[in-house]
Image (cartoon, rainbow, N blue to C red; front, side, top):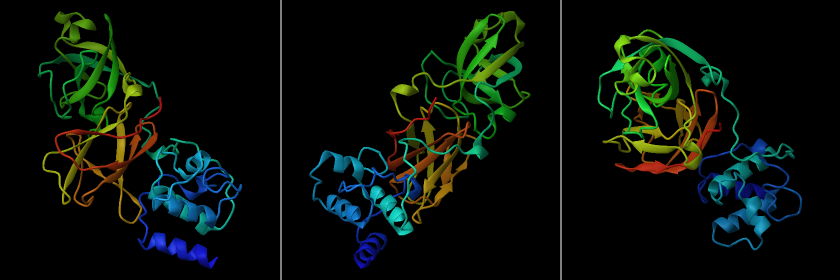
Length: 312
């Protein structure tokens, strides 16, 4: 027990680095964490993990697999952090860890998947690029659309992918801009898109729409882009390539707690307290689905790929 306490103290006092916790101590199973393969998870496994972090490679493939406690494909101090929290509880945990699965955040749920909205569709006279949501030019597989303020909801639906239906057909659209004068449900369609759902001469027509998943997101993870001028003293970050709209974004602070970041109308999350990074971000979509990405470095003028994507 004394050895166990000394090792835990060494980790927690910074003699060995500990990064953000990706899973809780409750999620260690009898296999994950059993690094010395004795069918138990105890301080001996922490000693093996300490050796691996100090450069003494584990000799067995199964040992390495079990040492990757948060199942992110690498063995880091994040695994040690979870194991220490488990050992400090000093009890046997039987609940298995399910990779890439996080509890649904009920507070973030906007509506059931597939919910249909109705309103009026009009012409959008703006350019094809840009808009209030400050998004990149997109593939013509998705036309652009401006959304009323109520549904835009302070950028909650910025970057949302919609299936919009009118009397002539259905098209895919990306929310990139605002329709300030519109009522709830109203959309302002890009000029070239309007004739695909209704006769041009009508100008204002009934439409229905629903949020759909980005169909290319299965091939790439969520990406992050830092706003020009971001630094350790002020930082703006935007999420891209997310399957569904983002309800909230949090970062892991130095105390190991996730802190929600305020969102601006122009689709950037901004904070003066995040520091220099690299960051661990926890993002939640409008259906309460949660992803966590580690080691997102503060780099300007480029997209930084994470490793996670929201489930369908």
